[in-house]
Image (cartoon, rainbow over all chains, first blue to last red; front, side, top):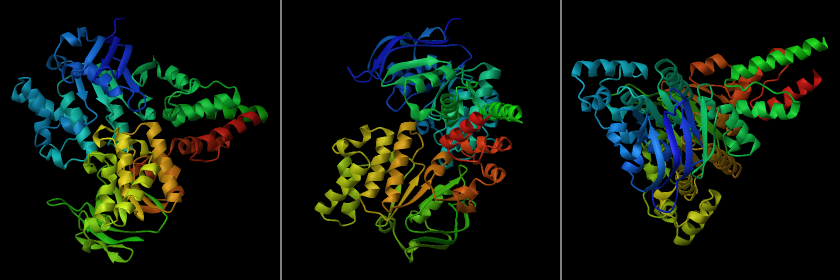
Length: 288
Length: 271
C-alpha cells in the first residue's frame, strides 16, 4: 500500500547548520492513528509543521529530502493548498484563535473557503456538538478556559473536513476527563470517518488504546517507527526515554522480567486486569 | 500559615466561581488542589496571591488579612508560578529575570546575587545564567519561573499545573525538585491534573468542583471512594485501579507500580 504521508531522507534546519530533523524516513498509512513521541527538542513539533507545510514555507530555513502528503510534495505545494487536506492544531493553540466569539471562530475558516452561510451555520452547530461546546456559541473566546480553547481550535479545524489531522500536544490544558474524551473523539473520527490522525503526546497511556503506530524521535533523529507494542519494547530494551513508558507497560515489563511469563500487549488497564485475574485464578485453582 | 474563611468570588458579569471556601495550610505541608477544568482551582490561587479580591470572606496569611495586601506584598511570602511561564518572564537574561524579585523586595545586590545563584543551582539553571530566556525550552522556562520565585526566599510556593506540556523526563525532574524543596522546609501548594504526581508527592489533597471545596483530606482518603472520585472528573492512579480490581485474587491495593509488580510476581511464584 502506498503511504499517505511519507518523509524521504528529510532533514531540516531553522538556522543552518543546526539540524532539527536529520535524515528522517517515515511512512504513515491512510486511515491510521499515529503518535509522535520523544523528549523535548526531539523534533516532534517540526515534524508536524513539515507535514502541514509550514516548514519550510512559513519558517524558511534549509531542508533536504522530501515530504509527501496525500500524493503532494509539500515543497511544490503551498500551505493554503495543503490546509485543504491537513487540519493542524498547534501546540500554542491560542495563536490559532482570531475572532471574538466561539461561533465566529468555527465559521471563520469556512467563510474563507467561500462556503455559503447556511452550510456554515450547520457545520458550526455540528462541530461544536462533536467537541462538547454546544451552548457556547455566543461566548467570548477570551473567557474560555485553556481546555475549552483547545477544543474550539479542534472544532475550527474539523469544520473544514480535513483528511488528515495533525495535533501537537492537544491535551496539554485538559483535565483527565477532557483528555479521555478528546482521544475518544479522535479515535472515533479515525475509525468511523477514516481520518488519518497524527498526534504529538507526552502521556502515552492516553493514546495507547487508539494508536496503530508510534514514531519515536530523539535529538532530531528517528529511533523507531512501528506498532506501539514494538516501540515500547524497543524503549525498554534499549533504555531509551524510559520515563515515558506508561504505568501499564512498566507493570507488564517488570512482571515479564520477574516471572518468565509473556503477557499480551496491553492497551488498557482492563486488558491487564483480565489477563492477570485469569492467570492468578488459574494458579490458585491448581493449588486448591 | 494560610487560612481561607468562607471565601466567595465571582468574575465581573459571571455567577460565583468560588463558593464559601474555607481551608487552612500548615507550615511544611505539600498540598495539592485538584478538580475539573473550570472548577475554580486557579481562581483560588489568584485570591491567595491577592491578584483578585474576594467578594466575601477572609484570607489570612500568618494572621494578616490578605485582601488588605497588594500582590507585591504577598510576593514577600509566597512565590507564584503561573501555568504559562511566558506570562511571567520579561527580562533579557536568566540572571536578570531571577534577580528582579529580590531587588524589588529591597535585598542588597550581594544578597540578591547569593539568592539568585542558589535558586539557579537548585533548579539546575546555573549553566544558563546568561541565556536569553525566550530561547529556553518550556521546561527550562518553567524552572526559571520557579527559580525567580525561590530567589525571593518565599515561605510558600504555589505552582499552577507546572507539568502541563512537559515531557516525562522533565516531569520527573520537576517532581524531584518539588520534593527536595518541601523537605528543605518550603510549603508547597500544587494545582494539578496529574494524579500520579499527586500520589507521588502530596500529603494532602483538596478537590474543587464548580467552585466548591468538596474534599479536604489525605491522599489515601481521596482514593478511597472511586465513584466519588470519578464524579469529580478524577481518576485513580493506574496501579491502584489494577490492584483494587484484582483484590479477589489476593492482590493488595497500592498506588505504586513497583509494589504491585512485586506483589503479583510473588503470587505467581506461589501459584
